[in-house]
Amino acid sequence: MEISKLDLVNNKIVELIELKRVVARWQLKREKVVFTNGVFDIIHKGHVEYLLRAADQGNRLIVAVNSDESVKSLNKGTTRPLQDEGSRVLALAAMTYIDAVVVFNEHTPENLIAELLPDVLVKGGDYKIEEIVGHKQVQANGGEVLTIPLTGGYSTTNIEQKIKSA
Image (cartoon, rainbow, N blue to C red; front, side):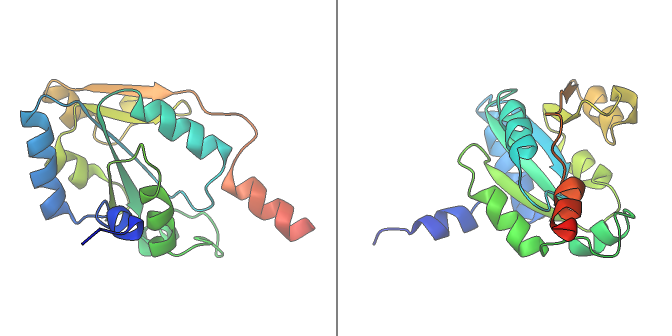
């Protein structure tokens, strides 16, 4: 029986306990595991370019997504998230260069990073290395922490404002 493309995508959406096993297998095969995180509310050019650059930093890319509850704690406004976590996660998992997507409920993914200990931790260029949550754990484990330049002019907030003013 052939597995559907939707099943393949859904299989990339995992819980922490399963993701720990997957990461251990990848690292045993000497595959470089890259980790990044965000809300990814409305996927736009800036997100796509950022995630492609993140994927270029290793062999496997994990994207951690803020749960709906977590987004509300980030003070992004009363309308956010615009899309529920299931929709945001599915859109990311459908990207061929993303290997795993996991949802986290906390304000930050620090506990998730400490559990997974990726080889590379990546955030956007609007962060300094020492501001990146999890940088200490990753560096203490011999991993690297990198920033990637952001594509200017793209943000979910700007898209939301444009829609409201139309």
